[in-house]
Amino acid sequence: MATPENPILGYRWRSSRSLIIGTACLSLLTEVLLYGFVVPILPYMLENRLGQDPAQTQQLTAWLLGIHGFATVLFAPILAHFIDKTSNRRSPLLISLAVAFGGTILVAATPTYWALTLGRVIQGIAGAAAWIVCLAILTENAGEGNVGKMMGVSMSVVMTGTVGGPVLSGTLLELAGYWPAWYLPIGVLAFNILIWLVLIESPAHSANSRGAIIVTEDTETNDSEVSPLLSPIVQTHSKDNDTQQTRPPSNFYYTMASDPRVLVSFANVFTSSVTIAGLNTTLPVHLREIFGWGPLDVGTMFLLLRIPAIVLGPFSGWLRDIVGLRYPTTIGWVLLCPLFVVMGVPGDGLSWASGESHGKPIFVFSMIGIGMMLPLIQGSGMLHALMVLDEFEAKQPNIFGAHGGRSRVFAMSEISFNLGLMLGPLLAGVITEKIGFGAMSMTLGTLCLVVALLTYYFFMSGHQHTEGDIAP
Image (tube, rainbow, N blue to C red):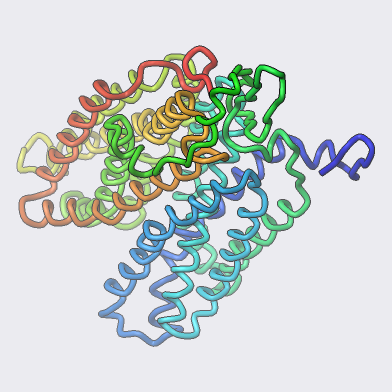
């Protein structure tokens, strides 16, 4: 670590908060891009490189995509537990990027089907760690009153990776060939690793997630817990209270899951994931049946769904920083309800909403509307869980250990999100097959309304991470 007596070459720019935030966003984008990058290439890998029966491609593809989410759900809490044991963010992220690099090489080489499966598991584990560490870095470096804005930017980054991964891989495979397509993610991962090797965690950045400076009556200080996320606040404690600071940490998951506000927070995360996964599963077949649309038209609809979310993400984050989480999130869920219902109207046997009548503009309008509402709900559940965590740690410092529990909150959020990715297609697929697409969209709309009511009732109305609301 640099000191005035022992300067390091380029210390100022290598420890720059802006560079750290930008590099963390790049790492987050890379991990999200890796998840979807393989999707258009998998049929080629299975049929041409591994010689699998084309009739089994759909089933094998579903397994390879699902195993990634399963690995994330299984390992995220374990990884978060160890990440929360240290205030260092750079080393865990470097390890996760290196592991992701190895997993990507294994997936690209595709020596056998089981090696391909192992590569996806490795990618899932590394991606879970990188996701947790990157979000910790971004929130800790956001600065007072800017956490919502930072999460809005990060959600835009995630959406960009979600959209860009399949588009880039499909285009490169078609125009350049198999290995040139893989040069992109491999090269980006290598660049990520190189940048993080150059960066320096300054004391302000490498400190853990809390923002308090504990001061005893004789002015001794304990600065082991300092975070740029919260404004530095000096707390005075008598030595009689030292026993509270040193008591064994509480069981994090039991304590957090016992609070209904936390459960509603992750219900937000889970439901947003279910809705998107449900649409991904059912829209291609539904649009082909009612409008005769092919892959290009379906892809355009997905762009209409995601581009507004990318553009409006930072604005929604700014809005949360100004007015708090409860009202924007509730409004987003409430407005999604009629939009999902309207989305299911075309093709539901109504002559005025058929493909030859007004069905297409109705559907396009609903997709754009859903895309505009998504930024209001995405990331809100995780931010609210962080607010509850801060409240726990304000009442009882070190309740979750010396370095806090922020990484474990991110792990719980990632588990909720991936459970939605796994269960969403099952729910939407079964309802669409047994009853119809209209019933499925009605179900999603009803689910949004239920979550809106829970959000309004349980979400705290205060602003996110301001000195007046939550003291560390």
